[in-house]
Image (cartoon, rainbow, N blue to C red; front, side, top):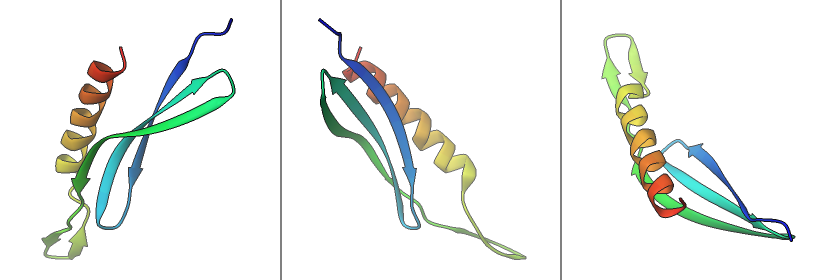
Length: 71
């Protein structure tokens, strides 16, 4: 019998981001959203930019939540 496997995905969109755990158990895939966060731009003198430091912090939060729930 094959064990189930978990895979983490990170989705960054224009307005929000999320972490999702995909669980593959035999031939069935189950997706669970573990963390959702906003993705608002920051204005700098040369225009709008992604707030990469905040996004990175939210991604790490999502990884932590996912590892707690799926370990």
